[in-house]
Image (cartoon, rainbow, N blue to C red):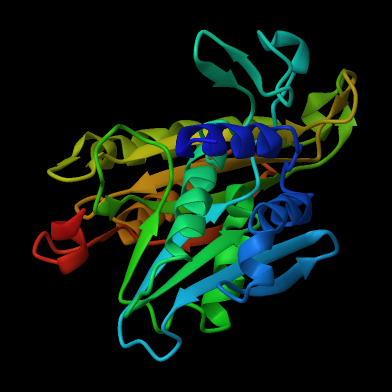
Length: 310
């Protein structure tokens, strides 16, 4: 079987596992099965670090255990929820192949990159290496980078000289990554019958006020173009509120996602969100802002050895 055929077979099996922020342990099992000969021969060392039942991070190492230089290779095993499966051209977890393309949730983000990394890792395990290579397959990236945070806190990145992440994108190798802010804005109002809105305070109307203020406040930051990372983005992706059609909602919330750059950074966006949370809202409505997750934009030096190599 050729290298390409190995990648396609492994990718197909991965895509058929519906690892939507869960069941990553099944993907880890699949990777271990693929690497079974090398594991049995002692060419690869294996660790499984449990995040939750059925959700294990997988850490594999090859090469000189006493090496001074270590290359990390990273990929996540979870995928985004497919949404309404009836709207898919092909079932999202069927790994359907047509016209030389494999279709399915996670086929790009990012099981293809992970499958390619695992196949390359298998081949490298048979080489005599002076350095070390550490492959990490992580859980929960699509939610809050749960697995990567867990491994980082446990020191798995401390010895790494460089890190390759097989995330999707264009055909170029990128040496920078935008930052991220996830936030929740909750509006607290007062319930009343919809025939007497004057007796209540509409929490959803409070959300509207914040959303308009937040999008306006962050627009100038999104207009700034970073020479490496391009434009920052700000999206409101979840809105929830209300219990029934004839009742004024006493509470509602929205969640937003921001991707930041070096010149439109996390601090600037958080300041804009906090200012928006002070916007004028309907009488009786109170807003509370929670910053749920923050990662700063990062870039490697163009002169870095790994950047020059790849």
